[in-house]
Length: 126
Image 1 (cartoon, helix red, strand yellow):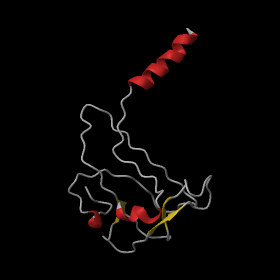
Image 2 (cartoon, rainbow, N blue to C red):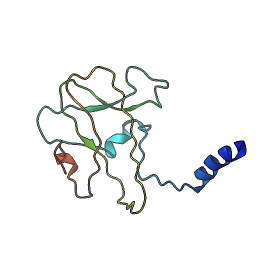
Image 3 (cartoon, one colour):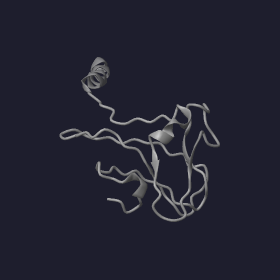
Image 4 (cartoon, one colour):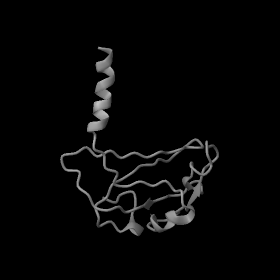
């Protein structure tokens, strides 16, 4: 029975056929600026900066987008090639590091269709 418990997870890994449709590691300095578009829709917009933040394991490998001002609105998006996951499960994964308490705010990820005007993206964009 012990062999069976080990064999099944290995078989499961071999049988999986994952496809990565989009991956961003922010490991090329300011290169992210050519792949990401900040929204200009609305008032009180803040700017994103590339940073490892206040705490990290490896300063270079831990870099990501950071909001640079308190009490601002932020919106940013990046396009990827159109795809269909018909008949397959789609998994969206991202990491957020909150370095301070959030009194009023939030963060979320949305997937849009290909017609999105990235500069006009806002919280109510369909």
